[in-house]
Length: 92
Image: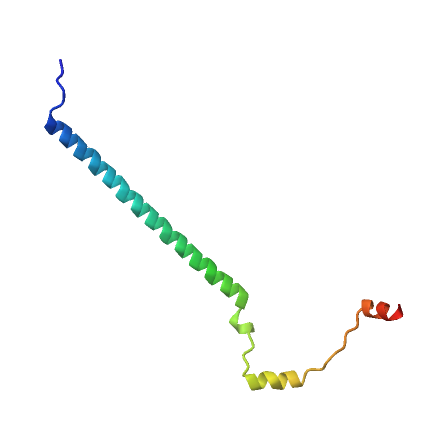
């Protein structure tokens, strides 16, 4: 006939369960931190790619000073555009 576990065995078993629970919690924290780091890295890459797409190639950009821009704007020929809607409104 088996006897009930003594207090030493019960205490050791409780400590073993507690240590296992703490180890699982620690591993869970490590996994969550790793996933957070990966997500942050992917987010930064997406942000970089979006900015790169918005700006295009730097070779295609035209860099001018404010004065140069005004000079170019002064030399622009102004073209008047009339739509068909404007001409039909005048007939009525």
